[in-house]
Length: 428
Image 1 (cartoon, rainbow, N blue to C red):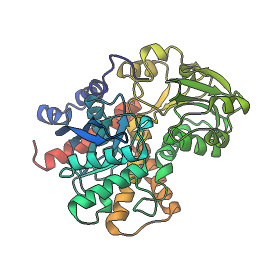
Image 2 (tube, rainbow, N blue to C red):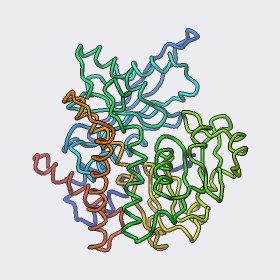
Image 3 (cartoon, rainbow, N blue to C red):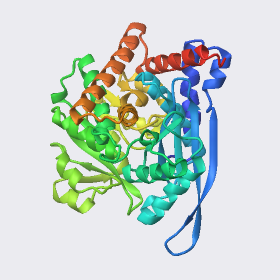
Image 4 (cartoon, one colour):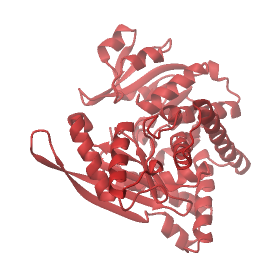
């Protein structure tokens, strides 16, 4: 759960300001990059199945487009806020820059709970959202994608509405679509696989054998599922997984000290990542409190849920055995915890590097759509591995050479790339 009083936008700006000071960023560039360049907030009236009309609040925020079209997902979440979307759009800018793809940062969201909406209501909400932003998005301006509680079907409804309005076919206008309808093979796995590609490189750099490691995950949605699958395929052992239960409105940690069978865990979860408690216990899982994922005696922690999960309070629960934190989620670590992680000598793979596999594969999808030529799954994943590995090695090298924290090194590379683009364009 998000903690009361936490503001992700303030956290994003705090991280930015820290690195801007390190690299002595010019005042005008700093002012431009520490806030979004464009924000749109709007209402979406939706006719409900019972004949009533419900009004939803939506957002689309573009942080920076100096390096290319804005790129970023659309969240459906009951706790969505403008500040959350602002922060995520900013992180998207750095994410695209650190993996060196020609895109900028954007993000969108609607305050809603899709659990409580029928399929028809979700479709009408998607189409209403696009009608409000159709003049802002497009393959060369701003390219949306799925995010928390949205999926390929939502994106296809949005694309269909966009193409209806613009009277043409523009499959590159929205990514994350179903395969066969402009979607890319490998996209489903991309974010989770990218997390493990980064983790693999980290362990190699630390001279740690992945087959001798254990891990605990927070979250079991798409990112965590595929990360856990690849991690276990590489020989690692998942000891615990935390999952939000939509029925109880609280989270639980599922643990097996001998290692969880990931395929069995996948078979007993729903499309929103909720694990069936009864079935989990039947296959040998202990049922613990939701926040116990962070307290496990493992080598690796993988927060793959929402932001602000590793806080000053929760950090005290982290076991002395933990050697690596690999951030699969966006902003899972509070800024004031970075100093604690450094003091404990825990190696951190920052979020906008670790989870950049999703936007990288979205970029691949956009390229394939615009060229009307699609690659095999093997080609996609090979290109993804190459891109993620190259990005990680650049950050790792800078961190080692300059004795920097990994988050600082990743930010320095990303911010410098965007700052250079801003200056070359003559914006400042």
